Image (cartoon, rainbow, N blue to C red; front, side, top):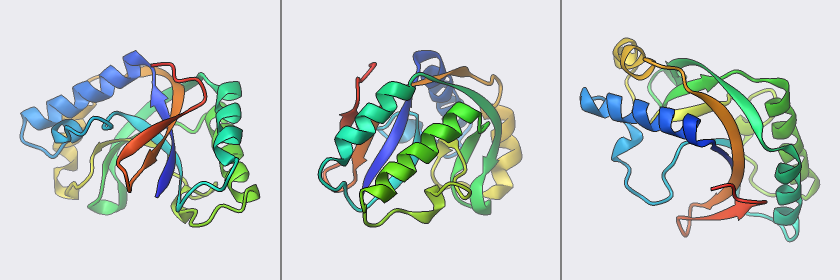
Length: 175
């Protein structure tokens, strides 16, 4: 599986990491405990089985032309009642336009295995705070995680390869 992900500016990344730490400090699940070197706050635009030849270059050109994209953090919630704890992002026009362009690029390239929950109209833009979370703990998590709403932008893009557990920069990597 390969992803197309946007990476946060330092203030936004630090704000999310701070929320991870606050959750862990009160004993709630958190991504703070994931020590893999690729673990960092990001927004997933698409997940696919693999990239057809040439699509990485087209995606790189696309994100280079679009970034940076300002982002506004919204509320903390649990997706699907007992899955990830996330910080929802407001779907501002620049972000939704970039998402749609990435999706169109992958569809036009004949990419196999596009996951439907990332499709325009189904995609819920968010930054993950914890991967497995009980809805019963949502109120405490909101109080702990959402002390501050970080602000910033998406400034770089990457692709994560779930087989090799490595990342590849898409376009100019800002940091």
